[in-house]
Length: 485
Image 1 (tube, rainbow, N blue to C red):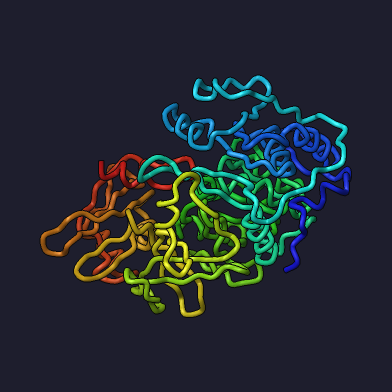
Image 2: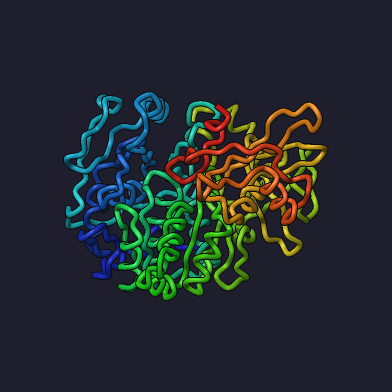
């Protein structure tokens, strides 16, 4: 694919077509070129800039301005605790912080000069000369589940290669209008959900706060694509299933060109409920902070619930055992996903040892995600190596596939699976269950038989623990260390 040299070719056209809409506030491409361009002109001497990444028009303008100026941006999660935020600021050492006027910033940012973002500034002068593809674009901090968050340095080529590969996979073009309500401090909401539409020359309508009513309104008003996380699609599935179902929502989803879920696995039951009500299939993709997007179900491919599709254009992907040898295909051929390609980060900021450890000797990035591959190349994620790989009775088992099977049981509202020490098996499989009805909980025998019938006997849970809800983070991922604690 011949990628444009500029990140946002459509900005140069200065057209009146809508680019960004947040609530009742809209910027055309001409207005965005003016506001982001004038801000970019003030950032030229900055080493890095922090962006107080609220779900607002100002955040989008700030990030576009930093990208136009060639100044690496560090998106800050407004919900981050004081200690973690102080670590991110000290580690990334930004020259200043960009924030919407009126935003109250925490004490961890007191030492930084502040620039208020004006989303209406202009007129814009000549756009700055953008740097080359290897220049850092964003520094996005990981969740820090195994220590302090690490700053993944994402070069400009990672953004362009991922977004252009998604253009190919999703047939994404300037006529598409994306609706979403994702946070803007991570890859999904910011890079895919804001930078993606702008690179294509299309538009994005951000809901601010997710609601099924907002989704229905925007899709019925001409939006063509919806991005969401499993929690959002679960709420959609519930709304479609309650009583006689939400007819306006079903009609809206039926008319959408593409429904995409990411950041965690979408349970098979929610896939089925949405497909039954709308005739449309939600497609899933797989990526992470360090790699951006690696795989996706293609718009012209076979939708297959429980898979994240095939490798994207330009991405090399292999599944290997603990010695780095490629494993075969099939449901029991579990291995770690390793990838390489232009979509990868360049380093963990200030962490050369961690960077070196993340790559194999022959240059493959070790994702830490465990998967199996279907014979035709479709990838099925079965969990994280650190938390979801269970070694039981001589088998390597991924927690994710058992969770999906448990979610198909009518008595299960939510499920998580972990392993714990067992003198006989090495590890036994433990199911953490949120029952549909607390008064009629499915017991361990019923759930074990249910899983064994769908997967294999050695994958059945041996212990069941009941909960009122599972601990999840902002992206809907289950926090399994909290379960064990």
